[in-house]
Each structure stands twice: as structure tokens, then as C-alpha cells.
Length: 176
Image (tube, rainbow, N blue to C red; front, side):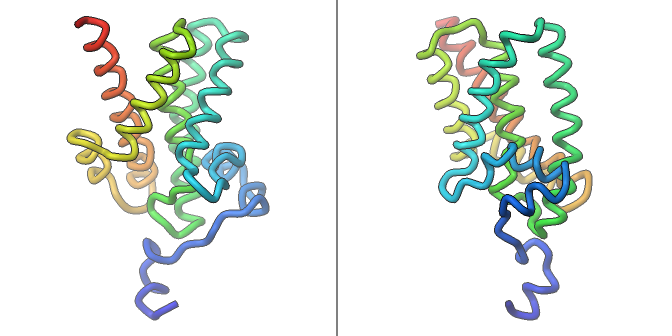
């Protein structure tokens, strides 16, 4: 590591492990209970975990309880993403996938009930908006950078905008 990378916490990073994830409750949440530890495409794996967990959640919670869970998950996730990014030394590490989980929960909360193909389409659209970051998603990704509460919110914010774009695309498609 060079002297400049040691001084710049945005460049310095650690590869998260199961031990790191289990070392703090915030890490377990931010890393999507392990889905963020995937070596390839952790955001997609986290989104898939969010999809699968939502299929279970919706069977056990009423609509108001689902909405409350999303609100609580958003606040708890903000804290978890803030702490975990700081501990990893990276302002927006790919291993943090709680932002994908909470965004996919929001999408499925608003589109359900829908069949498998509708869910798959919503999942694929969300992944497109989250990966490519066109227009407003790209601007949202640049809005809140760094560490601390602002940076933690930034980790989540662009995924919420990607979820909004997904929902707007679905609404437009249904309208047409």
C-alpha cells in the first residue's frame, strides 16, 4: 500500500469475511446476512436475497406491518451502512447490499401481488437501474459521498432512486 492510499480511507479497504460480518450487528445487516460476501455480483445476490426474503415476509405480516418493517429497515440500514462503510474504510463498498435489499422490498411491497414474471421483470429493471445508473440514479449516486451519516445515506439513496425509477417504469408500462 502506498503512503497516499494509507492516508485516504476511500482507497484503503478490506475484503469482508464471515468473521468481519459477525464482529458487529451493523456488519451483519449491511452485508445482507452474508449475501454481500459473494465474490461475484454481490449487489445482484443481495437483491435476490431481498426478493426471496420478501416472499416469506409478505406471508406473515399485514400490509401496515410490512410498511413499518420497510421504514424500520431503512433507518436501521442507514445506521448499519454508515458503521460498516467506516469499518471497511470504503465510502460505498460493493459488499454492502442492504441498500439493494431495502429497495427490492419497497418495490415488491408496492407491486404485489404479481406473478413470477412480473416479479422477475421488476427485479431485472431494478438491477438495470442500479448497475447502469442512468439519469437520476447517476445523479443520486453522486449526491451524498464520503463517510459518516451523509455517506451512509448516500449508500442507500441511489438504490431508492433506482427503485423509484423501476416503479415509474412499471406504472408507465401498465398505463400504456
